[in-house]
Image (cartoon, rainbow, N blue to C red; front, side, top):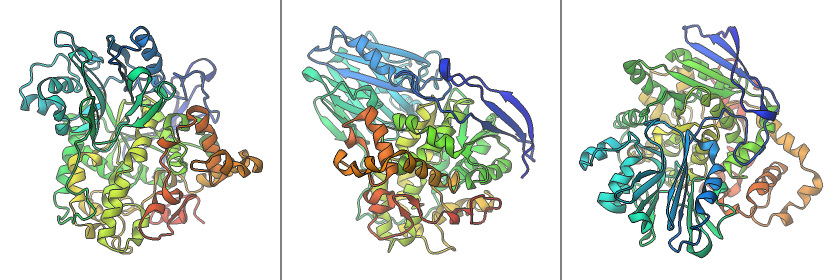
Length: 602
């Protein structure tokens, strides 16, 4: 496919003041008539000017919540001012508007990205007469079905979050079991005498819980909002709800979530349930895009989306990030041409990747190296997409269901496959979901994940794990998923070797990143690493570089950093494998197999 540079148009400045820069975009015509855009950015990276404006991004708004349950009224006099200031630390997640509601017993603060009912869905949503209120981050995809099922009174807004308030009033906390969505929320009843907090089934949306002075309890979408306000902080567990009377209650307990569970189904129902999930997650009152990596998972989602968009006469908008000649860029262009999408690309350099690290760590709230490497291109991608849409769909979660990572090649049997899938599934909230949420939210963008719809999860996890086993080139990783779309996705994409995001965007940039860290951290600093950092001591200069940045914002918050055993996801598997080390994939050349024109292959 030949790209022809036809235009150069200035885009709006990314920020104001010292950060004001003009970006250029090259518009290209693909051979099928669809449009492509290649963004070119300066290598200088935006640094922090204050706690509410970080990074190089368009000033759109995203969802965050902050709640304080204060039954003793310890903070009554100063709470609103304090909470508005703390909530502003998360303003990069929003706001199309900021809101506050409370009394002497509680406070709710919200930064909003307006997706459903942009004009009327402001939060917190309050029923003054009934003394009920709610503050929510995320989306409830089945809110209309629930309103109809329980014949709820007419909603006052068009926001999906209002159903939380309606159900809490009539059913109490048990309604959480019926929600299909991505969420972290707090509902208040009886003017603060009752309170409910909940997080979605696998932690797609973040939520933290902290214990402050005089019995106050805090809830926040991000650690940065309460890290200096609480004596102790915990991550709110995925798939649970909490009330002061019940404590934590686990509401998500699927049948397959047991090492002894034996899947017995075939894959015949997978496509139908995945298609329904995609349709449900297309719910929006604003345009939606797709993050198109050029890999199997996003290709599957794009294939399902295409007829839906054609039926509603919506434009099909796709976004890709990578270095020129990378596997992701090459195959995403192929997929875009195949589908006829309005395609946008961002081509980054290794220098840019190194310069953006501080911003990535601040938003990601971790120092785990494998996660940071994959988050860097995600940051560029989200920044690009946020210039065009407020909502994107992604292919996240497929590998944790279909055994997509290359180290599954060494799994000894089907039972081991299922056990390992359970292990990595239960880390999603600290890994893939955390990256997808934080990098998109940093730019006022909401990411939706159809593969992690609870019905899709159940359907795939009940498949016989023997069908997920890798057996040489004739039955590669995710063979069961690939076969469902044979003939609909171009073969170089359909049968492309699995690449994690930090690998597919370029074959050599991680080496450049590690060389930068090696040159930045002195030998003397590294020699002190094991004594300076008693918890998770850095094992390389790369890890030490990340750790120093993390500590500058979140010192003492190590317990919120998920560190893989052995330094990588594969290191914790029950079987020995040599596909990955703490430094990344050992053989990146395999990622170029079957793809013409990939650069960086010896």
